Length: 263
Ligand code: KIV
Image (cartoon, rainbow, N blue to C red; front, side, top):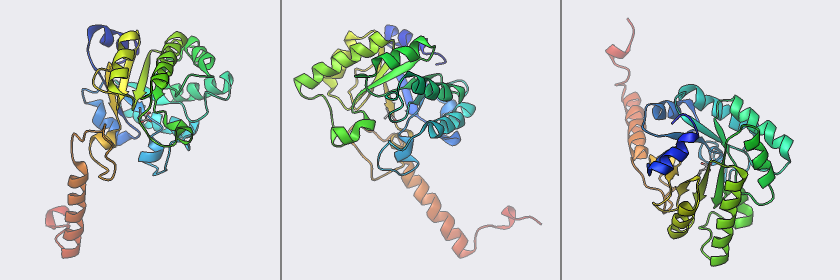
């Protein structure tokens, strides 16, 4: 995928959209040659790469830096970058500056969490030529209000609110919305009622596409195994085996050998 317009085409044709996070040149290079449609420079970078307990530490500079690393290596991929914590709550001018920095770094679109209280800001970004993807359900930037990383909208009132929020995002001009950790039946019915494409993470199979964090999908962190993550590879085991083999070879004096040495 190269443009956000292909999201609407994919939805219309019933073709699932494949999205994965990428934060660095190395993962972007791997994804550049893959069938993945779209790369998300997510603020989950703060937890996955920086080892922080939440995503709140992301700044425009950090997000722009990672966006640049990814965009250079995957020029043929559609790249969405996360608007950092509070960036859409400080007014339109601030949000515009932040989104502009992300697009100048190589993103084609931005993703912003929530909608209540900042629909006008999102609409202004869209009207300014900046494609916006929404994000509802478990919105990690609100972890302190939500009381943890938990499934959302299980109760009827919350489900109704999520529907209203999704409609507000569509009215603001968003081209897509991430639905994170919501019941599959709710995600299905919201997906059916929206024109824009839904991208699920922990939201069942009926969304228009799926997104996973690169490191989770490849099993790099054995300690992190939420219900909605499937490990499509066990790279953790492979990497640990490689590290142990290297250490053993150095300790035994079998690395480097003659072929690996200069005369
Ligand atoms: O930051 C991120 O990686 C995300 C995805 C989990 C949707 O927002």
